[in-house]
Image (tube, rainbow, N blue to C red):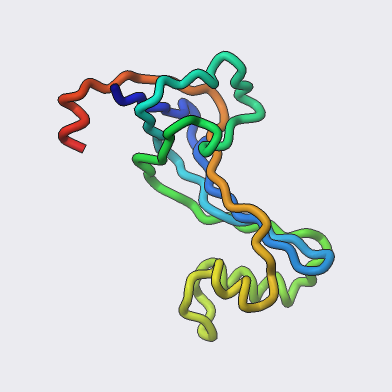
Length: 139
């Protein structure tokens, strides 16, 4: 069997990266307007699941993000990062910097930022559907 976990609220599937350098921190990633997660293992987390806290996708046995739609990149900075550095990091993150052509995760690390975390999360109310074996063949 294939189980599909669908967040019922827009923006409830999130990919987040956390970088630190000295006393500075960047939180950035992607917020998907719509999306779903699939697993072949019956989800048992739902009994303890708290919609306002959410769950890390790696904590759902066998789970993988299957579909995502209309992602929006977002970036947040600690107050210890000055405006000029924020501008440069924002350009790198959104891929508008003329200096760098590699992915922002690589550039941040090349600039001395240490990646502390990279996870995907589900938040809010969830629906779990059982997909038939026949439907699996068409994915």
